[in-house]
Length: 186
Image (cartoon, rainbow, N blue to C red; front, side):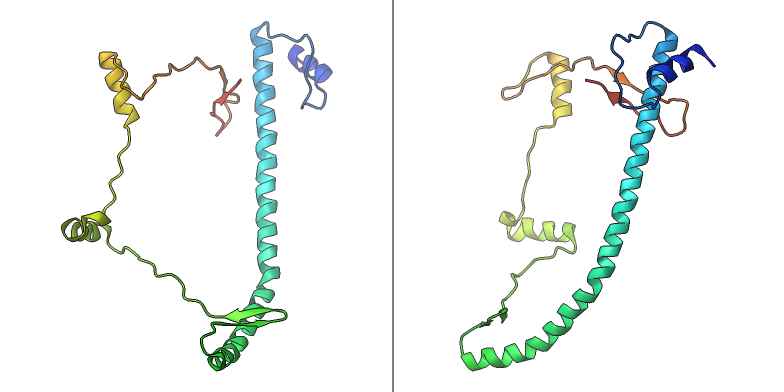
């Protein structure tokens, strides 16, 4: 058993969630140990996230199956109520609904909607015949403005250049497949 493995087993026997008072990184071995611990912790986090996603998908599928029967009931009974409601509303004159003790049935017009099936053709026609129907969106191109500031040093009115801080990051498990992700540490 290597020195670091022995230390690891003594200090963190279960391998998770403990802080070691007075422990410092003072060698390549202890730094490597920390990165291995981080890598294992991240793997456990990912495993739990994957498990939770699977459970959520199973719950959604079960909920959909359970609700299917009730959705069919709602659709079927609604189809039976519709002709009755049409007759009752016609008898009432200008009414658009019938109030009952258990609820209300009626008709309402859905709002009209516009579907743009060919954006380019619609824009060309609108520009010629109804330019108010064309929306022009202006925004600041931050990349170009930063390039201009780097070139001439002038920061435009309404802008503030915030210099990026040097952030410490940890990338654990670089030798493991698929785990070349940097985590910013605050």
